[in-house]
Image (tube, rainbow, N blue to C red; front, side, top):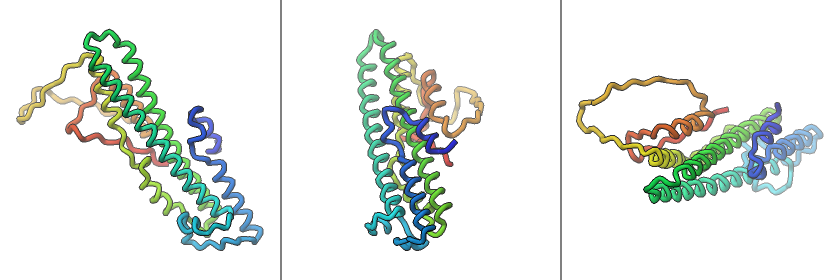
Length: 243
């Protein structure tokens, strides 16, 4: 399946215009290749061409259009991700307050459904980030394959990894959801043993989980068991699947 079709099928309908515009970027590459083949390469790009240097060359060539569009897409996805994370954190905080105030547990079912909804929203956000990240890798690989005279993938992937939506650590949302589920279940907290003696025998079972499914598995588990943190402030993010 072509990736353009794949991203359209996987996109959440109400977020559709917030995804990477893979089709338009692919079209700019086709136009740039056609320009080269026709011998009308006005841009005369060197092998060291990058999106930053192309942006300064306002000649509306397909190549400069490609890089300008690429930069706009990064900004769009970054801003939308930041907005979603802020909303999720605010909603999780509000839900935690409701759970704390519901001392008689009269609203447990409604609060549990709200926690489930927030968990599903978080999974949608992670899927959105991973799908766009993969899209950038795909389109940059296609650019370098069809235009080997002006490779940009290595440079731009480094640039991409510096973006907040790629580096972002928002696993704290899952930890807060775990605390909410724990409160709704009425879990009792254990007391940390500071000495070297252990009052239990540790037993572990390891499972193989695909990277793209890691957060989904965490979400299912925390609905039944609390997240255990060795350190209160240690909230490690789930890795973005590598293409």
